[in-house]
Length: 119
Image 1: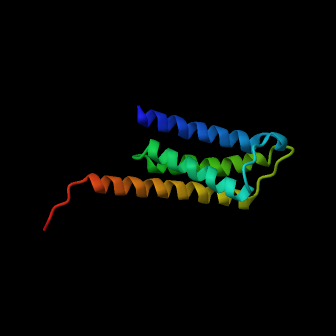
Image 2: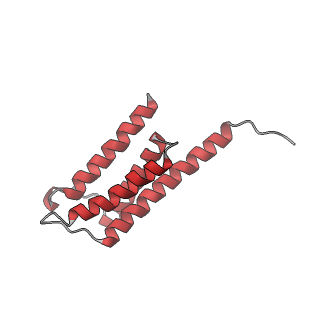
């Protein structure tokens, strides 16, 4: 049940990011500086996807990094928004940071649970 909740949260987070990225500039939610928003939003998304699909790291990377690049490109097709390479790189960095944090967390929690042999 917990796994499904995390997966649902990951997809919901990605849908919200798509809405915020592609909506008209007036409808865009603003929390703090845009640079920090990009990094944090994709870090949370990367973390959730990695926790939801821990054995599918390649797929997780493709979804998180691919959506960052694709959404930034799609912004260039909207009349009142503009996609930039800097924004895309911030999103990719945030996604990679979230994936790395989840992988580290999973590694250390697995290591803690594993019986260690005393030599």
